[in-house]
Image 1 (cartoon, rainbow, N blue to C red):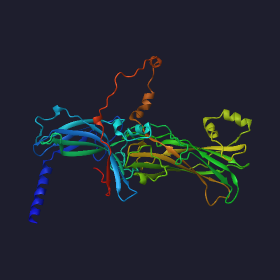
Image 2: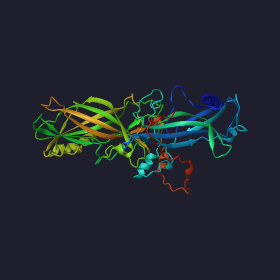
Image 3: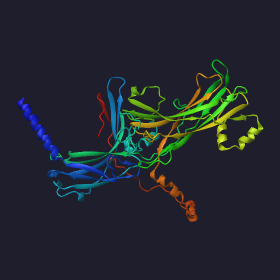
Image 4: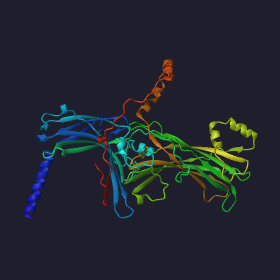
Length: 500
């Protein structure tokens, strides 16, 4: 007992001495507001300084300053108890320190404060070596080498001013940090480097995300862009006709860049085209309300995704080391009883003339194909426009796909209608549409000023002047040594501890 006590006391004294002798590192960001998180987007410069002080003379070899982007996932195993997970460092930018900034010899003196400036530019794309796993198509590799947004960290989920929920599970996280370290090489082996001190500072990065091509919903079991339903007179009674609801994928929701206030509350709209095919001379049903909800889906996996994840699969995600976390966000409930039905007749010459001279909206209404049971001549059409407004109580990140994680969105629409004799249950017709969320670049805020620029006739002539386009004479060379490390699989039964 005595020996143990002496050893313990000596170890504690040694730890205290070691902590006191460690260099003290502080990372200061330009325009940093105390208590707030700095947010950046594509092309932004992350500027600041690393300040180092010591209590006693300390020899060192180098000061390392890097910007790192890392993904962490943890998935519950279905076959046996426990968890399996992965981590990937997809970004590592190193700030070179000029030799003239170091003291000679490499020695930190007590009482002096040493400052090392750094500047990182947020890239718009990752190195090709980041995504080295097998893939089903080239488009997957393109998406996996785009910069993903900060996700899953409750300290960074807000807009830099308040903490908000970004609707990501605790088992998936994408984080960016600026790490500073004071390193010293081993005297026995110069290839081994030991960190005398190491600190990190979190930053929030929301990259610019452009609009992608609409999702092909043909033969897609998850999305529903067209729905037919019989309209009945009442319980155990005959049918009035057939109601058809159809809509295309709405234009994307465009988020404002980080640190910029949104000017518009309505980001986009969805248009639902309705068609009613009566059995005889029946009138179309009276419309009730339109309820819109946004379904937020976060896909994460212990192994890289070989294709874009989808909820339409038949195999449970847990059996293949994958997981899905969904959350539904209510958007609006609006009364659409004032929507006007327009009557059409296939055999009417007047209707043909009207269709030729119709506006684009009327032509869009008539583009809804007939129902599966339409055999008559008369039908009715209507159009309902639904504004999509994102609530300010949640944080939304752009749609993205990375090697270990993906975030997608879908719009759920439910339309109620009323028919005589249906007082107990209100019939409803449902649609589910894919929708993208993108991020605007900062220069879009200057769009109004750019639109006011006058273009001269000489500039127009120069634009249409023939020019020669030839391939470059030299090929770009990529340094493979700069590629981030590969995926490292970790298996544990204990919950994951978030990095600080």
